[in-house]
Amino acid sequence: MIQAIRETNFDAFIETKANRIGTQTGARTRHLVKFINDLDEAVFYAYPVLENIHNRYTQMSFLYNIAPDVFTGKINLIPAGYFKYEVYEVSWVGDDVVLSSATAPATETTVLPVTDENGVVEGLVAIGILYLAEKAGSEEVQYTEYEAPKTTNTIYYGQ
Image 1 (cartoon, one colour):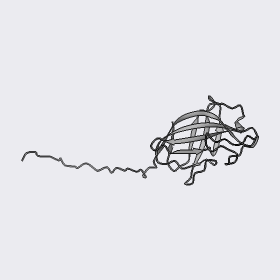
Image 2: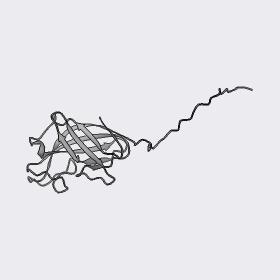
Image 3: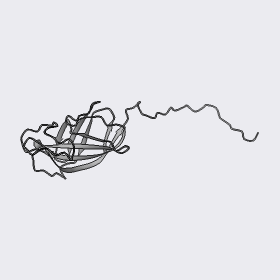
Image 4: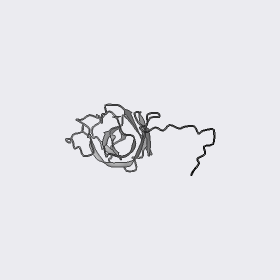
């Protein structure tokens, strides 16, 4: 489970190598992440702004931005709560990996013309849950705790 705070940058550590599909080197592989809100089923896509593929996991960094952009890792997940996530492996044949609308798929179903410069969605490599908490002090529902009275409160019945 990924845990993050709303309107902040966050890192996700996800195991992607066990389900690896493509045979490309790590430099030619990126991951497209699909976030699905559990409450209203809203869908958000993003490529991580920074992606480090290690032996047992992949570290993915996402940036909070009021104007989200799939290709730069900028994301604005709303509202707070639980999100399902799906991670798709995208690979390139050419040496230069460029994340743009012309060269990288924006969704898992996007198909671009076949060239060495265009990425291809290989398939689903990881799924999980993201819990997105509200910032402290900005919760939608806030409770005020009252101090208990110092004297005994007695309720008389039937008088």
